[in-house]
Amino acid sequence: MNRRQQLGRWGEEVAARYLREKGYVITARNVRTPYGEIDLIAQDEENTLFVEVKTRASRAFGPPEIAVTPRKQEHMRAAAAHYAQEHGIEHWQIDLIAVEGRPGGRLRVVHFENVVQS
Image 1 (cartoon, helix red, strand yellow):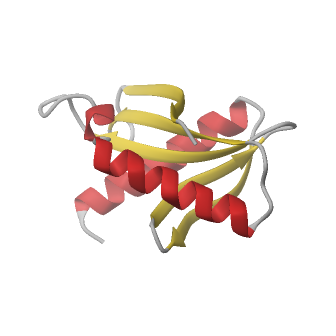
Image 2 (image 1 turned 135 degrees about the vertical axis):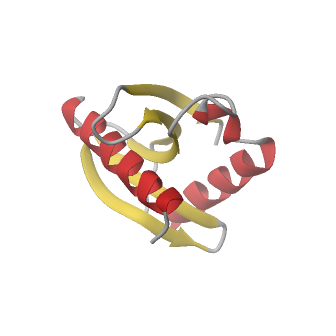
């Protein structure tokens, strides 16, 4: 696993911990669909969250959230809709969690809710 992959995995763990602290249960990770991968699937009492996690070590190339292009948003929507239909999920949304930092260093976590309309 290269450094970029390691940073991405670390960011996903940071995002999962953040969601658990907010009361969500992580029900799946790195789910592959015909339309792309869903990083995290989380559940609370009412909704299922399909979560895209973007991680960057620094802002040298901008904040992590700018990596979610319109094309990426369409893939996120299609992947979530596919999974929701296959699993009978009625109430869902797509969220983005941006993680900036490195293990052991300063950390910035921003949760953008309902970023792609279903």
